[in-house]
Image (tube, rainbow, N blue to C red; front, side):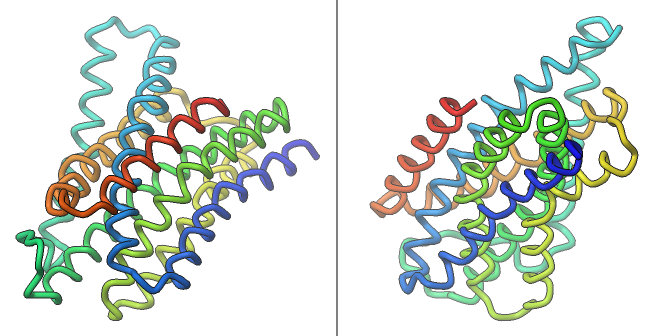
Length: 259
C-alpha cells in the first residue's frame, strides 16, 4: 500500500507542469510572458544543475569501486553525450537557426525558433523527470511526508519550466499533435519513472542511474547555456527579463529551503 501511495505522490510534480501550461492559455501578453518565463527557466535550470543534479551525481558516484579519475571520466562522458544528443537534434529540427533582434521583422522565423527551444526543452525534461520520479518514489516508500515535500520541491521547478515550454510552443499553431503529446508526457513523466520501479519492485542499478542522471544534466546544461541564455541576451533591455531572473532565483531559494 505504501508503494502505491508513493506512486500517487509523483503526480504532484506533474500537476505543476499542468498549472504552468494553463497559465499560458489565460495570459494575453504572451510575448512578455515568454520573456519572463525564459528568465525564470534559465535560473531554475542552472539551479537544478548546481544544487540538485551535481550533488546527486557526486553522492551517487561515491558508492562504487571506481577510483576518482574513472568516476570523473564516466560522469563527463555521459554529460557530454547529453550535450551532443541535443546538438544533434539541432540538425534534424527545421528552422532552429535564428538571429536575434530587439524589434523582430521576421516573426515566422522567431516563432519557429521559440518552438525549437520548447521542443528540446520538453524532450530533455521528460528524461529528467522520469529519473526524478524514481527518486520521489524511492523517498516516498521510506517516508510519505518526505516524499510529499520532495514532490512539492520538484513542482516548484516544474511550474516556471511548464510556462516556458508552453509559451514557446504557443508561438506557432502548427504541429498541434506534437505539442499535445509532449505536454502530456511532461505531466506524466515523473509518474512514468515511478511506475517502472513500482512494476519491477526495486531500483535500477546504481551505475545505470548515474549514467542517466549525468546524461540529463548535460542536456539541461545545453538548453540553459546554448538556448535560453541566447534568448536572455537578446532581451536585456526588457524589464520582463529581470523579473523572470528574480522570480527564478526566489524559486531556487524556496526549493533549497523546502529540501
